[in-house]
Length: 307
Image (cartoon, rainbow, N blue to C red; front, top):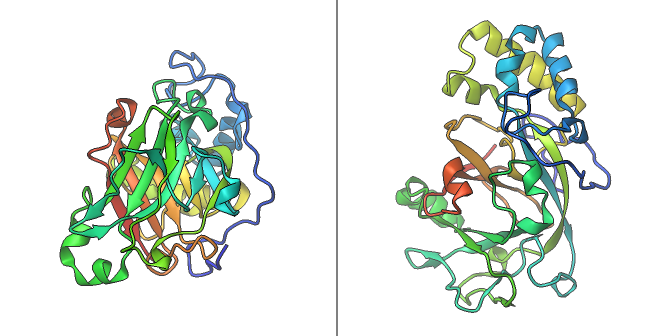
């Protein structure tokens, strides 16, 4: 991974990342008010009890029920670079070439072909442990225009947040082909392939999210959350900046987004993969949560943030 010393906090060194098996969620769990919590939340790392203890130590004990509602399960992902021939068709991966239906048409924005970022095979992820209403099968594909000249010279690009990307979904994974990118894409616009090592974890929102959605309103409470609670959480449990699927975004310059939306995918700057988002920044894909449940991706929008 490339050095990210310029970012707000350093990445904690991590070893091999394993998938934590968890039991199915229950919206009627009497011990939790949140539809995102599981009956066996101790299987997550960290656990709700551990996060609650940090909140109490930060002087936020009386706000814990409110904060707990905003905690979301998600997946932290680490790409392990391998020759793409070693990756099975339809397997989750970062970069490389997409494994898509033969009828798939490569996306573009105003004549500029998009770069393929990742594919997520939902069957490889314990989706029911995140939310029982989320899809559990099929493959998600993420595309975005990777072109610095467009980013900086075309003022329309960043304003078209719903059009400068494509999230494609297929339910039928039985007859996929590994598609070559268009010749118009340069070597820098075709990323190295990496299999995904993943960790299921509980994630907390940024203070900007709580303020924007008026979840916590008092300045002194928000200060305790951001400066004490979140800082200690990152020091103790957070694995750092990286690729994410679901959960809360890793905040750089700003960490707010509408409560009705969820983080769908977070792409990291990674020298091995070949991605660089505005000086070691991040690229976020957001979606309305109801749209995700219905597998409707036409209104996915992006935010690209540098350091």
